[in-house]
Length: 173
Image 1 (cartoon, rainbow, N blue to C red):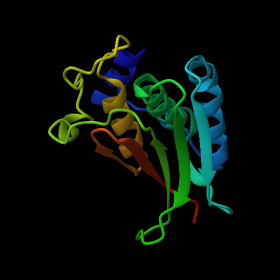
Image 2: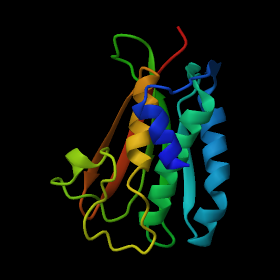
Image 3: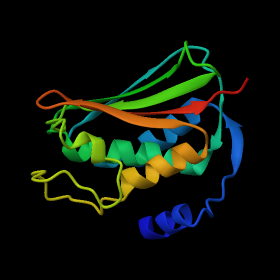
Image 4: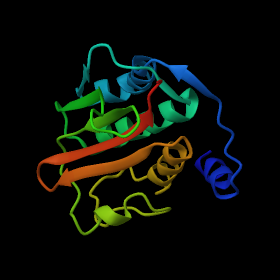
C-alpha cells in the first residue's frame, strides 16, 4: 500500500478530496485506529486541543493517514507504560491561518545527525533497536501528502528525551 501511495506521489497523481473538517475528527480517527496497539503496551494517548479551533481544509483520509503514521511510530518507539501527547493548536503568527497537529513521545529520541534525512524515502535511523522496523516510506509519504495540501511537516527530537512530529494545514478562513 505504501508503494502505491508513493507511486501516486512521484507521478504527481495524488488525488486530493479536500473538504472543511474539524481537527478533532482527524484526531479521533487516528486515536481510535491506534487504541489497541497503545493498549498492548499500556501507553496512554493524551489529547491536548485548543478550544474553538478553526476547521482545516484537507483531504481527511490522507491527513488521518499521516496522523496514524505518526502515532504508530510513537507507539512503536515508546517504552511500556508511557504517555503520548497528541496536540492541536492554531499557529498565531502564520501569514495565513494554520492549525498544527503534533505527536509527542518520550522514547529514546533521534540523534541530530539523522534528523535531516528522516523524511526521505526508504530512510531508517541506523541501529534503531526495535524488531518492528517498517519500510522507510511512511514519513516520506506523510511529507508529500501534507505538502500537497499546502501544509508543512517537521520534527523536534532530543536523544534520551523523545520526539515530536508535527504538521500544519491551512485553516478555514
